[in-house]
Length: 180
Image (cartoon, rainbow, N blue to C red; front, side):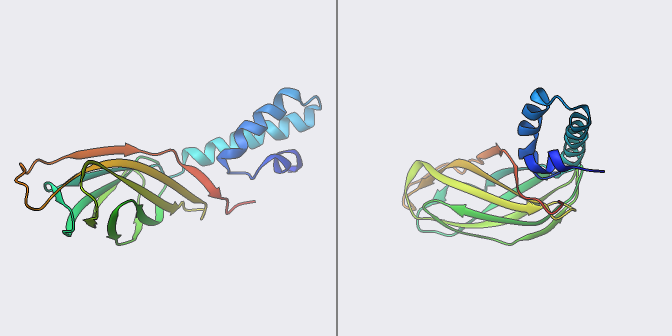
């Protein structure tokens, strides 16, 4: 099968190709090319339905204290049908952080991992960006960045040990397609 028209507008399996393909379909007059474009759209939609979809929640065992190491539990949920492989979590913000990579999260499953943090800044709303990269079973690469706010106290302050829970959902994009 020829995918010439579809290939010129984006990679098969690349969610970013959907919009240009729809635009091309609206203006294309040649029936053979219209059929190719429609088949490419259907194939991309099918592949994206089978892709992993990760969401993340973070729970603290209590108030975080500036300059002190503590652990946050990171719960990663794969709401998609396909597995998410080679899940790496990195963070950006006024915190020192470390988290072990996760080899695989099967579709429909979740797991918890420990995120070691040491806040470097006081505040009721200290920003933390969580960046996740992962692959699907076709080695397509996905990434997502989620922003959350954490409360960080001074170690000398007396605070109630509440359990804040922040749930964030990201917008995921294919950043590299393993199929062409």
